[in-house]
Structure formats: structure tokens, C-alpha cells
Amino acid sequence: MKKENTIQSKSFDFALGIVRLTKRLEKDNKEFVLSKQLLRSGTAIGALIREAEHAESKKDFIHKMSISLKEANETRYWLDLLMASDFIEKPVHKILNDEITQIIRLLASIVKSSKQNI
Image: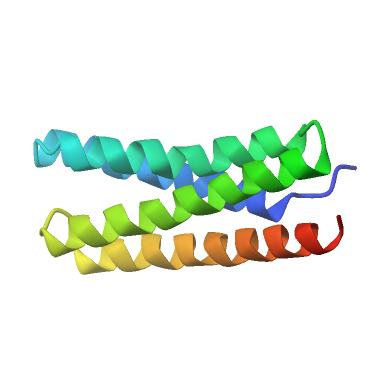
């Protein structure tokens, strides 16, 4: 039986939440610019993690996971900006911010331990 990959499942679930939020922002608020930025960075996290699963080398793995970490940090910026500009409510921001913070911590730990094991 295959072991569950925590970072993959968390990033996929997070991306799904971002897709749903983006759809709501576009439909209800007619907000397209910030929501597209959020959609791009929020879904790139999991895509890069999936790419890293089949990395060509340890350095390639670290590179992809590092980019995923950068995308996660960017996503947190867009979430903060959307809340500050009153496009999303505080409870929605809190849920997504808590999720992205967990993902950032996991990614930072993976990158750090992978660099130590080169």
C-alpha cells in the first residue's frame, strides 16, 4: 500500500480551495486581476511538488521544492492583499492563511533537510 504524501495532499486540497475562492471572486466581486495572480501561485505549489516527485536529480528536487516554497510565500501575499482590500472576509483569510502557513513550514523543512543530505 502506498504511503500518503502529506505535502502533496495538503497542497492539492489548498489548490482546490484557491480554485473555489477564485471562482467566487470572479463571479460575485467581478475581481479578475488579483484572483488570477492568486490562482496562478496557489495552484503552482502543488504542481511543482508533483514535478519534484520525478526530479532528475537531488538538486533538481531541491530546486523544484524551493520554487514551490516561493510560490507559497507569494500566495500568502495575495491572500493578505485580498483581505486588506476587502475582497475576502477575515474568516476565509484565516482558514487559507493557516493552511498556507502549514504548507510553507513543511516545504521549508523539506528543502532544509534535502540540502543537508546532499
